[in-house]
Length: 512
Image (tube, rainbow, N blue to C red; front, top):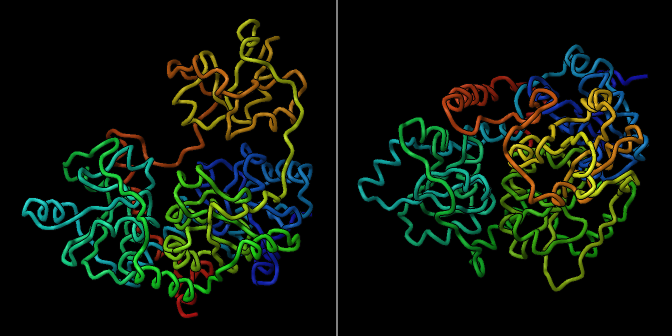
């Protein structure tokens, strides 16, 4: 029997029980209306991400999207070893009929928090014209980009600095501010990360005037000013933080009720099979790639606050943030994460000379399926099916391959006309999991797309269906401006639309 929405709402009031609400629809479907406290995990990606989102197989999982997708997902999750899976009766429609609210868009609670921060703290904002006037007048002003490095490289405001992400601003950006009169402007590619970045810097007690740039890079472009592309001005990590900044981090963690744990204490929590512990590394992706705890997941602090539902799915779980021993980035993250997660918060220092935490989370073994080498693929009739996300497919795919999601595969196999169907994944998408659910005539390209890197092309892309794994703006062009116009109208309506919803009651968290 499916679980009713009334029962689910009742369970959510019980703070002594962990619960996960997952939405298995495509990102595009989910953006058209979903439960705000659910986490999006498309059925196409289920095996790839489930252990990161739900590390403990005994956790209560409620699938709450569209019943026909949820029922397939429940069957698969149980086969993977998850023992407590329920399907919400009538999906999001059932939730709505029981009085629960449905929200469009993505990362709704995180973005609503950004709007709440601006209203609560009256975060100063300037527009693009003002920034340009200051620059032309020769005023002492610096622009810090609060987005990850990949987004900065894609486009940024000329002369702006690449901080590496929102939580890095207080850690790296203040090295540039030697004069207390210097004006500091924080920008993103929209609203939220600029607001949160600016208020985070203000909260450190910096004496400088700090502002968020109204509507970020889209507004800069709309004002008729050119954007810059590629690398320009990177800010290195500091050799050390000041005693004042270290004290701020300690005070901020205390206010967020975040415990400072030892590695041994974290290992004890990870060994506890009765409760979920997330180990999230808030340092930059580069630092994480260089060295990290085996059990950790890379979750740069600014992105963790911007998209909490992409990293934390289990309500009531313990979240442990990993940082360098100064804890500046962890504190910058925890001060806002406490509004978005209702479980205990903690931090642990990463020191390369210490023993690393073992990767002892629940694992799904890679299925033993038929594989075919790239050299053999080129010598026989095959139907190449690329299961990676559409952005990666567009950036480089094998000639003649078709981009598809698992919901397309039955039709592709039926139409293969005797050709061997070969599924293509990569280091981040193990096609073997999908192959294990299909007829034995299907094979997986051994070594993934990396095995055929020399043959990749961007020409003649083919898609089995509409592109449903993207919800952001068009890359560039006239449609981008209209997309952002609608986006800003949506974001500015969030506080109004969520008013009275208990899952958006940030004021009560602030009073604790």
